[in-house]
Amino acid sequence: MHIIAENLTTRGEHLRKNKTKLKEKFYEALAAVLPIIGIVLLLCFTIAPISPSILLCFLMGALMLMVGMMFFTLGAEMSMTPMGEKIGTCMTQTKKLWIVVFLSFLLGFIITISEPDLQVLAQQVPSIPNMTLILSVACGVGVFLVIALLRMLFSIPLPNLLIVFYILVFGLTAFVSESFQSVAFDSGGVTTGPMTVPFIMALGIGISAIRNDRHAADDSFGLVAICSVGPILAVLLLGMIYRPESSSYTPVVIPEVSDSVELWSMFRSGLPAYMEEIAVALLPIILFFAAFQFMVLKLSKRKLMKIAIGLVYTYIGLVLFLTGANVGFMPAGNYLGQVMAGLKFPWIIVPIGMVIGYFIVKAEPAVYVLNKQVEELTDGAISASAMGASLSIGVAISIGLAMIRVLTGISIMYFLIPGYVLALSLSFFVPKIFTAIAFDSGGVASGPMTATFLLPFAQGACTAVGGNIVTDAFGIVAMVAMTPLITIQVLGMVYQLKKDKGADVVPQPASALDMLDDDAIIEL
Image (cartoon, rainbow, N blue to C red):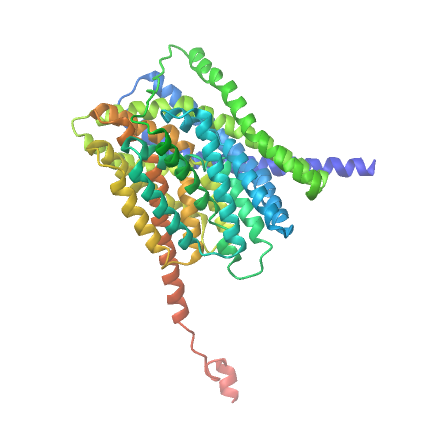
């Protein structure tokens, strides 16, 4: 009886803790999504009127987004992060390089196929069979995850590798059609989404935990950065083989509902598809972890139960989040872009796009995971708020530049080449950890919110001005992935300057009399 009472007390404590955490996560999600709701409502009631149907879909989607973010962020903390750390530690403790290489490739391959956003990319790329594209991109991520882990094990400097890879990437762009370049660079950001990022980042932390040198913490970041290159190279190589001349574009369907029942039926019809999609996405990761648990880990039932509950939260969160984003946010983004680019002064879309970009990155589910892990690993030296502000500024700049591309039709290469040259140059002047975090943040920032709101926003604007959607609107994911590389490293330079300035101000030793109080001096 005493044991049963203890178990019930323990379960009660866990339930109370989970409720408290859920409430905390909900407030965080509310703070992330409310600014976007406020901006869209302000635009709707002033310069960009939209139909009640679209507005209701958007508000319903926003509610699902908030609840989804609440469950996902808690679930990622409870399941994806500990799973990745445990697997990473076990892989490197084997001391056998071939095992590390094989498991790294297999893991990269599995989690890429699990990424829901990859299915969306496959449907947008012309002339290439969907499965061919998916398998090629998954192989690209697998190969580059192996390279990323070997870099950590052998302490190879990240900037040197990135320079080599991006020279190769930009060299290959000369051999593919212009209509294919934007989609290729978008693939780098799309495949590092909410499913991939928490797991890969935790994997890096787990591997670095067994290293005792002073650069272990610096090298724990950078896996997402290197893995983002794999999909770009894979899609560019496929572009050279298949030689697509033009890309297909399926316009976003603008919803029209007559009553609340019809509104709910829209979301209800979307739920089964996303439930199946996320289940298929999570299953390979669960099976991979189960094999590790059976052969090596042997975790206690209590820890396994916590991970299992976290996986359920992750599943619920992603289903709600993606349903809300795709059914509610995508049509609203597309229609808003059309209305605003069709105004008498279409250039107003540039500053408004920047404001939307500043706030919308806060609603990316994987951004929270990145900011939290950075703050914890650096013991608060790099705060989550500073990271969030730097990411927001970077995304705001990228959306402004993307809107200029939509209005003018300037090639994306005129932005990407100087941007990456600047980012790679900065990597030699900032602390190593900031370079690794910066290049990780590029893939993290370009997640589902970019694909389901900002990309349709650009597509709608492009339709209104009569531009080429494939060359001018696509590429916004690549732009969002590029600018944080610069802003986070600028944050690193500021951090280093403050640190150096603080070190210069060395306190002068006090004299013996200065250390005594007045009474002691009188007595002397």
